[in-house]
Length: 391
Image (cartoon, rainbow, N blue to C red; front, side, top):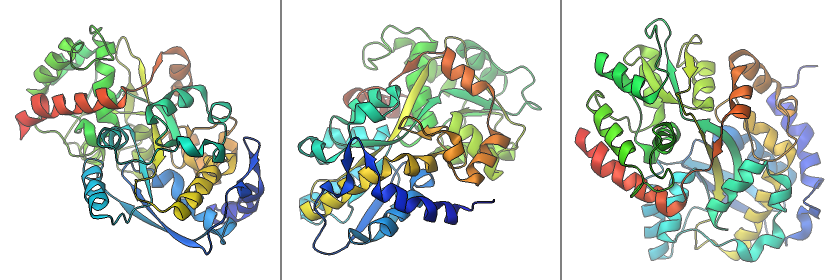
């Protein structure tokens, strides 16, 4: 029987709403006096993975939330906007879906709500998360909860008809860019998952002094980025532009990740025949999306948001994270096989997934990203030393 996304939502809504997770029923939280409207801001492209599941929440818990409004914004812009709203006492965003970029910036600026007093209202995260996702949970410093996870990259993606001999090491990539000026591109790391994964992965590829210290341990990395930057026309403001240019033939090699490889080929932005590769010394730099609550949100709404977080961590909700491969695999919790996902997700990944990913994930080291302070420092140094040279 064919199950559409709409029918899948309907058949699992009641299951998720009534299930136990981490030994607690969602009803442990106190319902609001009347249903509330929740405003969710996405700065990570996460709604591709979570919007359908969040919309199920209003169906399953109409007495808690009457409506969820969704907005999108660039990651570098949101922290300053929230800071201004908090200073004025008028916060109009209830929940932010963010990658490590705005998570780190927000921790640095003190704009996220500390959730540690509410741990009893959340599942036992260590028991439900995939081990590497739980390691990344520590990056939130109790100011957020992971909703999706993937091993990320950095990978290189290229068109095999234009790149007959793909680079196999960072040194070969540099040499290739010298011979093929302006045919390689990546996006500004503070607004790009592949961009920041490339930035954090290079110290492992180059065997730099300390891959965890961008200020004192990345001499080889910064020198490499400055040199390869001489062969790059400009740095894109986001990943989508790099994929579009790969698909159009403007660039021949781009920085990629598992999800940014699969999803643009599903959508037709990048030709299906595009290939991916790793570079010698490859370590995965894992990535995750977090649910964070800005300071200034009312206690009544916070109770609803905690209930929503519980709902989003059920296996039924997590199955939507497979999407069309955007954050492949996607689920952050254990025991959510692809067979649980909607049929269109299963079909997309069957057609456009890579059989080699399973082996690459199993056979190469998995590193967590830099912590918030170090990541903010890495972004600042990149903007000043690398990005500024291209305006």
